[in-house]
Image (cartoon, rainbow, N blue to C red; front, side, top):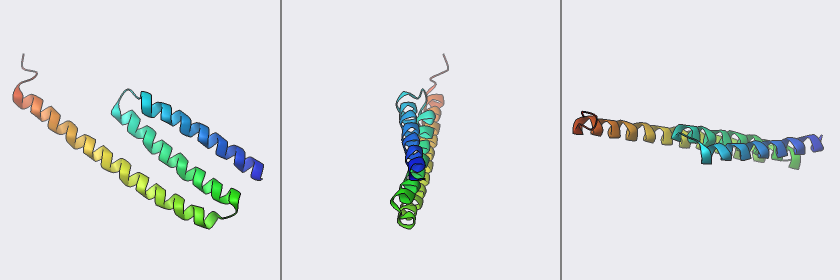
Length: 101
């Protein structure tokens, strides 16, 4: 059983690597933000699996839940920041007459 969980942990690390590719190569900032959120989700799964592998699921699950909450708050905060920043830049262009030519 431990071998299966260890193999699953290696597979999750591989998925985290694929998500890092999405973060660095994402054509849009929102693709990169989704990649960061997926990395956080995979990290929570990895923490839970490591807890079961080491025989201390209660301590590692506390860490995983805390990390999940912080990841969610961070992704929502960055998304809100990007939304507000995007609205300000668009309104600045329309007021200044950037597209009027």
